[in-house]
Image (tube, rainbow, N blue to C red; front, side):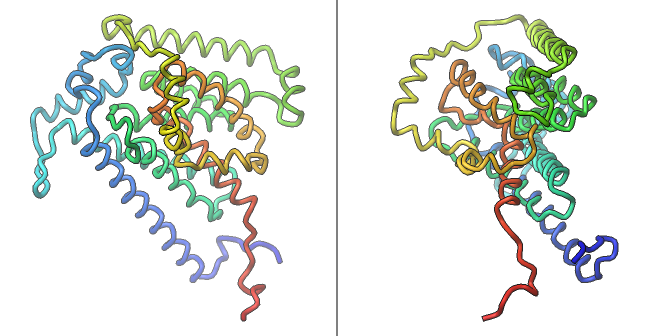
Length: 347
């Protein structure tokens, strides 16, 4: 039986689809609102938002100037205006934290859903898996007990990095460079995007080992140019905010001690809300070569974050949330067979 043309779908089917879309976006708005509330009102600030907005925090925090500019503009426009909702008095700092968290979460779902639809088709029911992005953000930011700190730029990292990754997979250079440039001003973890660009530029029709032999020299030069561009932006951000500063001092041997502590193991397993486990087990079911190859960079990401960060800060994996949710949707689409209602035998 040939598939039904959407334009010729009966009114009942069309109405059902519209109600489904309305339900999806209603849930997305409600979940984003709920996450933004938790982020803005229940977490302890890692540093003063006022100090961050004016570049008065230590490096590397102060060189993440995109959100500095946003926060500074909002605080300048609203001054000390406090909003009262019921018994809650919301300060300007909490207002902008809430707005950034809400739109960051909402647009991350939009991005993830868009990629799922691009890869699986407009009518795929697995576009609902894009809502898992909010669950993963909540697992990283709120559903933790060790480090419950509020970093002003956290809720936009998934959006910028995910956009850059998906643009590289689709080989859309305009979108890629826009995400790469803006994302670098937001947080310097975009240093991995040139590697994503490189691995997604490999030929798709041969095994990975052979693909490396056939890579175009101009692609390698472009990736190197991106790394130099990244370094120039990071240096500019440091210059604009008063120099390199003391920076963070994290001893990797302390990180090894934390990694060996069994009481922290459940936290490590909870990265991506534990959903990395089925993605790892069934990654071979992802037929899209470029998407699947991006997963090869995750061990390198873990090593770098382990060396420069705190293992208890699982928020450092926010950047990969759209990728994880998209892979999960594709794995489910390859694993679940839908049986038409007329083929179901009633008992």
